[in-house]
Length: 228
Image 1 (cartoon, rainbow, N blue to C red):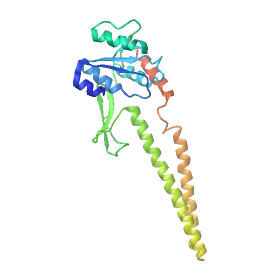
Image 2 (image 1 turned 90 degrees about the vertical axis):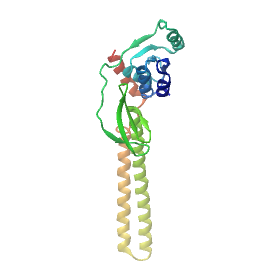
Image 3 (image 1 turned 90 degrees about the horizontal axis):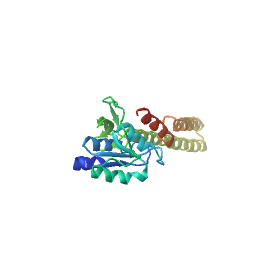
Image 4 (image 1 turned 135 degrees about the vertical axis):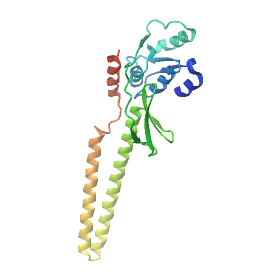
């Protein structure tokens, strides 16, 4: 929405980022500013979820950081060309935002190639289909994809173990004890492998696959305050 508004209306756009998790809105707000529009962000200290406001402050030269009760008055003042109401403050982002390396990755949604690029100084990833990701969104989407693949592996190994166990039972009932033992070994191996993958998934869920949680918002807020 921010991107479309900036493209259609240029400097006649006022973008507002409110309470929310992750970094949604930062790239669009940067494009609004690059097009000559204005940027207002809710004060992260009073937001229920500080992630989105803190990310916007860290990545965009916002015009005003205000508590929620002053947002409407700040918009009206900007439209009239007046100074923001008392209590509003502005903050500049990191003067040298990282440009990032030109690398390719796989789109978690369609499997296509993702191209990395910066829009108004904010990194974004987009595939040829049009799926677009911000940094935190891409991290979570990749975690979902990996977790889904691990669960699929667990189910496949469990099904294989059950099938081999059934085949072992049938072989034993027919007196084919050698084949029965072979099927039993393979069934146990499949079950053991499923347990290994399950343990790996359990461990990864608390580390590598951890979502961008509310606790990470403190990091965003600390970074934005450090840049002030």
